[in-house]
Image 1 (cartoon, rainbow, N blue to C red):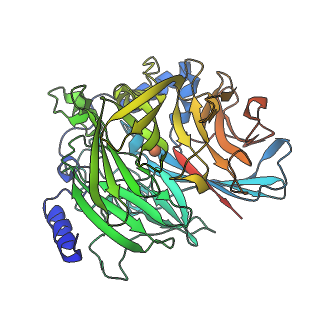
Image 2 (cartoon, helix red, strand yellow):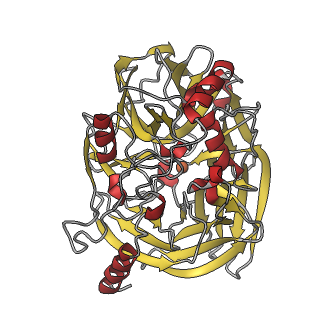
Length: 511
Ligand SMILES: [Fe+2]
């Protein structure tokens, strides 16, 4: 796409008031009465009988630096920093957000050095957070939560909560949401710096300001960053950034996708894969289901579509149809010599999980939702597609950083062996042999994303590192597994004196 044409197209998107992934009209000033179901009261009542809900409880303040108490021995060759991000400010005054995705982001930093781990947790001081801290109340309606007399929203930057992922870029950290720009964070102090205007210093000037930028960018082995951002109109912005975050190329395609939400994508060495799930927006007359996420429904008559984008020029090259399905997350994709594309997904048969993340915010734990299962897809050059579904439940799939977009022989993910509210097991799947090894933390733990850390850039070497919340003691621990012996349990476990809110994603920066 010619730059002039791109800029014109982007400008027209802005003019259409759909610059947000969340339609602005859904977030504009409302005089409607605040939630008629008191989420805060219901949640706190439920917490008395369902202690596992503690992971969704509100966090009041930052967590000052704390040296963790270590069980076992932290391997001497792990030096670096493990960053995580997730929503933590769920409540102000008597108001509690109605969906887990709405809370303000909080960074967790675990610094590994000389066999010790120091933790610090800090709210991301976004413009929204600053303003609401000062006011001591929520000022803006959330995607699902109406706020009485909420302030009008005219740009995504006003409500960007930066609450989903955190990646190192150059000397900075980028905290990611998905409906707006990345947020620059100071690596040393964890202080908020700014909402990044991609390409501001170059040819794009301010035209990319506030555009949706997903929380799941893919970083190539050479450091190049690839990403997408969904506009609810069905237009998707595609990004190719240099390792320092400067745009090499940005394009816009009209996919006509009307599902409202697209969370993750994939990349091979030649192509980007946009996998559009079987979702649509459906207005409900039910007053309790009029939020943005509430209106996203699954339609088994809508096939999943895979759009294959040429990385060389960010244009659509091919399209495949898959059976109806939905996935938040994908592990990896790669391409064979004949052009066959293979990828995996944590595949759900519907989108109930999205709505159960709202039910949990009012304390409902009896909604044992359908879990995702690992699925392997094959896209043939002749246009045919097939897949196999494994029995294992699966979420938060990850591969080693150096192998993103290339053939991976290991896939790491979480699973649920008990009737868990969250996950309780970590798994390592050998994608060649199909052999699966796992470690079950037990029903007392809520296990979060575990990430492979491979300093030697060789699959099967290194560590698997992640956090888990131990419900009975109300404490969170960091777990370090020898990556080839996961079933033996963690070689070291480092404990905080308190628990952390359940978060979403993180990354380890090796020093
Ligand atoms: Fe995610």
